[in-house]
Image 1 (spheres, rainbow, N blue to C red):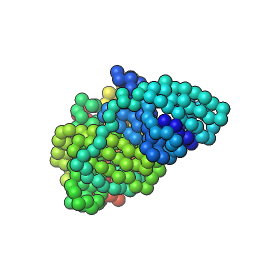
Image 2: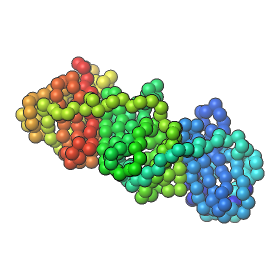
Image 3: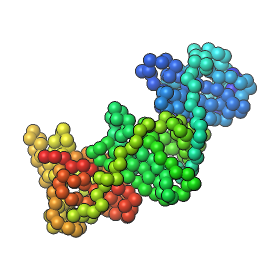
Image 4: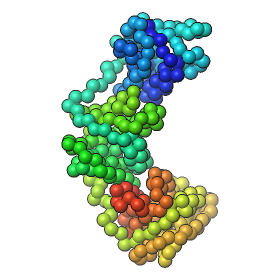
Length: 365
């Protein structure tokens, strides 16, 4: 291999691929980046076996070739170089990096030892505005379980059917669902691992593109974001029938300023019980009272004005869950619905007309 490349472009590609690299894997090659030529393109790839990412950049290719290089070492070296252009010269086992005033040789591994990157079969392809899909995924990520012992709950439900796209995430204590219009000739239903979505959100931010393409196979999903492609295994299994727990109506409904509620919850969190982050919400007349107490810290009561419909109500809830949900709601006004103290708490942005729904299961006190 012999290639001339812009340093800033190479550094960006190395940084993108390095996010998947694991230094703790029993397979040493998973700490490497695969570098290969393709006509006048240089491709960099990395994988952790569940996820793979490939990014392309323009280069002057004088000689074709490929090699696998330790990602951390390569990243540290390129990040330290101030030159504008470099030459990469590699054989099967090492790479030389040359500039006007630099000459470095890195020990590598034969590309044949790098894991085979997945290829999708029987695919369905759809395209989205990158900003729209980013905002939609961000609204459900916080509700997804981080416990990988239940893989289905550690993923996001993704469905397109009858002109509607649905995203949902839950850890069985809270739930977020986002609906939007999307016309597609094919129905789609799958579960995307939350780690994949997290990497996708980072990739969209780094690539700054207007549109992304999602390609779905039988057991994998691919996201084409600018010059990069993220491929992931899909989660096997059936997603819970979560719609059964979304309240169709509530006996108490309040409308309140989101910023005032965020401040009240944050203050109450200081006094919330550490094990459950529990606070009590009490609705009386046109006022919401938040109570919290912890024996070794003290207690706190804070009140904010609301518009109430229905009867007075009280419910114990996890303050952290409320904060997480409020952080992804963009409206200035939120609607909170309460039934019995043992029923789910419903939180909606006022303007979304049930296209964005969040629920939190109550604490049993």
